[in-house]
Image (cartoon, rainbow, N blue to C red; front, side):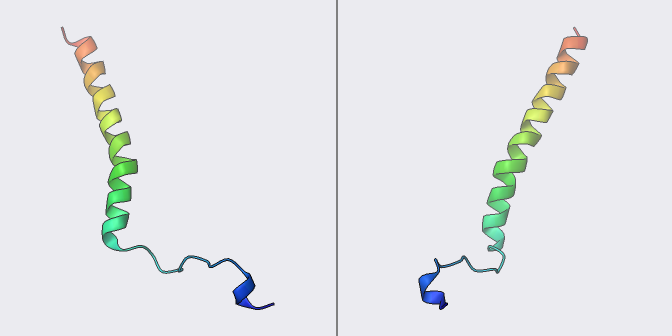
Length: 48
């Protein structure tokens, strides 16, 4: 079984730093902003 019949696998090397940084801010940044907004809303609900 030769490799020509198999679909090409992506390289096993990690993505460049910029791509990982953008992915981190897209995934973790949105959750961080949502948590910060929820914390702010909870404080505003207690403090008149």
